[in-house]
Amino acid sequence: MSDPTHDPLPPPASAVPLDRLLAGPVRVVNIGLEQFATDLAGNGAAVVHVEWTPPAAGDAKLAALLAKLGG
Amino acid sequence: MSAVAKNEVRRGFYLDSVRLMQVAAVLKSDVPGVEEAALMIGTPANLAILAAAGLIAGGTDAGPNDLVIAVRARDEDAAVAALAAARAHLERRAARPAGSKHRPRSLDGALAELAGANLALISVPGAFAAAEARRALSRGLNVMVFSDNVSLADEVALKDEAAARGLLMMGPDCGTALVAGTPIGFANSIPLGPIGIVAASGTGLQEVSSLLARAGSGVSHGIGVGGRDLAREVGARMTFAAMAALERDPATAHIVLVSKPPDPGVARRVLDRAAGAAKPITVCFLGAETRASYGDRRVVATLSEAAESALGRPVAAVLPELRAANGRARICGAFVGGSLCAEAQTVLRDGGLAIGSNAPIPGAAATRSHAAGNVLIDFGADEYTVGRPHPMIDPAVRDGAVAALLGQTDVAVVLADIVLGFGAHPDPAGALSRIVAAGPSKRPLVIASVCGTEGDPQGYARQVATLTEAGIAVAPSNAAAARAALIALGKTG
Image (cartoon, rainbow over all chains, first blue to last red; front, side, top):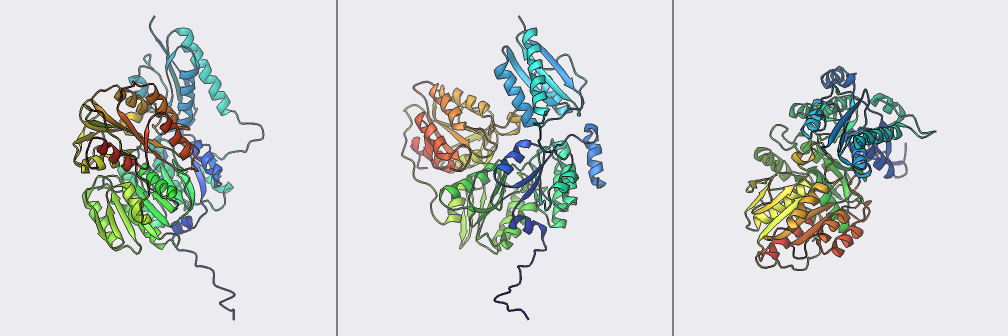
């Protein structure tokens, strides 16, 4: 049997995903203004910038439908 | 000779709006004879802006997948030179330096590269933002949507989806957040500390966090929920989720909740929830007249009071007393921060002044003109930012209004805010100081405050010194600037 003073249980991983975000560190996917990715990287955050272009040949309604379908 | 307007369409070309505005600004400043220049993706809304500006008089067949380069210049040669310069800039921006890293073109591509990703920051054009946010939530990511022009129906649906998944959905129209010490978007450099902030107010979050930082404290998290979260239709969905998260968060000892003027019914529900909060909490609904204190549950009226309540002591030094010249009786404000404009209105209204604004708080009149009365204008409001950079990025529109006010003989005080931080103009104090230095010798008092910290790229002390050298009085907070204006008019403040 483990000694609780020397082998403490790790804190329970929260069941709520947003609590894990607040526990940090943030790891960001940046979609849009590149400046945000540059600033995040400058502040030491892990970030990947997506080279985004309008999906569905610029048809926003079709893009929304695709996202709803899980694409 | 009459001006010549020319445009050119690049098919299937996309670059983000900030970078396009940077190219347009270079054309105007560097190519002789250019009067106006704009580079925009050819969405119907953007084409309407270009048409209204007289830049596509001959029409265009551009679609939402195309880039329009449009210029107006003094003659044909200058217009042709401007289009050539635009092409050259775009080629340079499109070219990647040798050896630079491949970049993913989709969310899924990015997730394959970044193990453990936990937040998607979305700032694509509003028509596409909800789709990107929905996709990110479905992949288990928390989301911050900077984009505006997202429908209320989409906002509610996205926030419900996030709640069902236990995720955070910050925004839409969320410009600022601090998560576990990392500034995101237009945020300031803020040390970690015991105070957690939930904000439906971008510059509200910046002002409270900066005041805390300058007072030696810090922020655990600053969770932006989007300016409409406390609107009736959204019902504070994300505010409640964020409050609960900060109650659970071991790093947070005191919660501050800041919002632009909320829907009254939603405000009551939030106050009910705050009364039962598991931690000390301070609520600041900008524009509300309520102040209340029940032990460590407090309702305050200004951002600086919110910071003081959380800190347990005053945050800012006292400003030396100023006196307006005889015969000058009006206070006018020109703001880049919407919440700072609302806070200043609150101080002046509660000081007994009749006030007007383009973004009026309860009790203020609606006006867009500085011509008469005490008027505070928010130059970050939508009517000033269509097709233009926000004044936090380029304060020219706001500074132009200050220049006009300096010449008005009945204006006693001009109030202005200087907002620092990541993404903001590199030297906003310098820009305002040049305007004031070029103004008439007999001019109104100019009272400014600087929202930011020493760790910001612009440096708080340097910005204050620049303003002071130009003869601008610098108050220790935005609320203190408004109070100093009241005192200068002989009001008690």
